[in-house]
Length: 334
Ligand code: ACO
Image 1: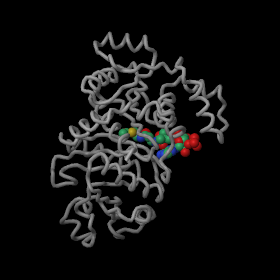
Image 2: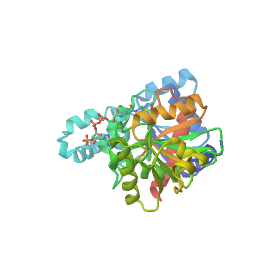
Image 3: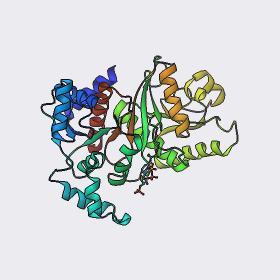
């Protein structure tokens, strides 16, 4: 897979520091071994050093070279707690509570990023999406001008006629259950940035609906049409069109009939779904029934790269997501 090879090669150059909060989880340790051996990133494992060493020993992996940090005893706890109190001043977070929260590696990891002690985080092999995301939302927050974090998938389909040589981006498949029109517009704009930064493609964004250019009238259709207008206002350079149905987005012959004047219809490479139900079901349909490879979710819109794994992930999924996180971290510097 050429794209992944490039992402890994870039990561080897960037040498970013990636914190893995689930430090004693076996797939995470296996991934850490591969990442270190292949020099993909610098790795920080969170947890009890004794427990991490014991699990590594039991499963026979070599994690020499990883930095191991115990959130319960680390000397930076005081400084991190002060920062947390400052960030959550309006919510009245007390220092004692902040110190207790830091015992949780899923809180300690975003604080490492916030303090400049790590460049990115990958977690979720044994934790639910919400538990990974909540501390990231609360302490790392969103990029300036962005109010919502969303999750994109890179989909590798088996037909190079679709998307960018068989590669498409789908969003938001992971975070916002029911985005409003402004949030949907932001999802389109941030997905375009991810498509450029990670895939290196020129995004052509289809805002999906069950209607194409007014063929149906419904408030849900209006939401997508309005989101398209807002996204254009947010970034006038975007190639974006909607609302449109999936067949109009992907099939040139359908596009000719349903949206003949569109420069996106029939050749879209970024699909923005109207809500999480359609997006999450949609990417899994393409993955399971059409045999597409799905990489993600790549979280976007956050002020630093933090990515969430599926609990069914393999060690190699973790390696790939760490490499992508390194590429995102590098894109932040540009
Ligand atoms: N972007 C930025 N900040 C957000 C977002 C977002 N998308 N969502 C919530 N927040 C912030 C809130 O503003 C709030 O901040 P505050 O404490 O400073 O006021 C904080 O995060 C907590 O907000 P809640 O509304 O209490 O959020 P909650 O914790 O209930 O839910 C969550 C957030 C977990 C992301 C929720 O939207 C969710 O469960 N989404 C679905 C996730 C999921 O299950 N996805 C499918 C599985 S993933 C897959 O299949 C690949």
